[in-house]
Image (cartoon, rainbow, N blue to C red; front, side, top):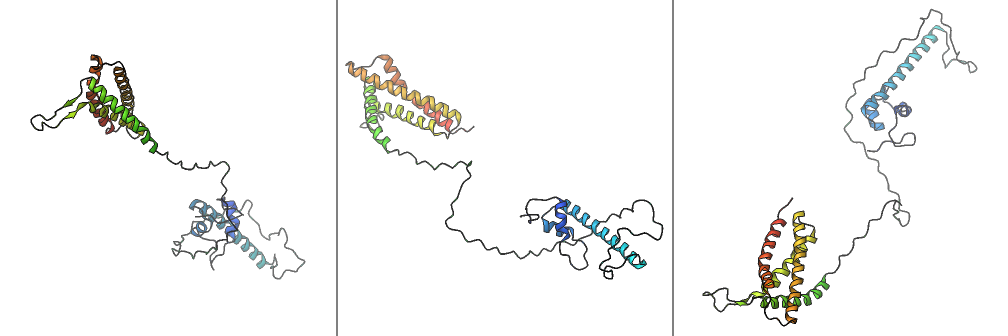
Length: 295
């Protein structure tokens, strides 16, 4: 709710500034001062300020009534002419001598005026004043504050389809390297279901590229996503870097062995390669547990 414009401003004003406007309010017949509710409604002020303003108006009215009573008494005694019968060139004397003894001392203070009981304000809402909006003058240009930073435009996400072209040759090289290293370290064709499906066989060398490289890519995604707890991000970070390093070392070992014409890898390379499936299983289970654990 907006305060009315008084003295050229809409900001809340003190009682001294509101007093002249309160004197000029139109009052119903028989009412000498406005009610507190009307003062609150007219000037959009609170109850304490309205009580102070009402007390001042009542004091002024009491002083004005007392002055009029003294003037009427003096006119009745002939000490003062009525304003209607006074000659044009006669002015009211500044001081009139009293024909009886006056008490010495200041006038008695007026009796305190008790706040009058005012009926509740009319709940009927006032008819709103229809305000016709001004016609727009030409094209309106929005001008921002010079100190207000302009919000940046949303950046378009980078395309990801070139990653497919990069991944295809890398996938071929990594797959062949791990499968070849698996053949040099004892990985080969096995029959996993003897007596059940004797004709079913699988080359266990494919477990190396599937396990090591797939885990490295997934751990890298978990680390960079930023949507997992801190413990999972730390584990994914170091395990992803370790997985990628092991993958690189596996490719180096395979190509060195092939270039040297070695058909069987040394025991320490065979031992390390044989432990990779077990290590990938453990790291994958740990990462899955940490991803589902919230701080």
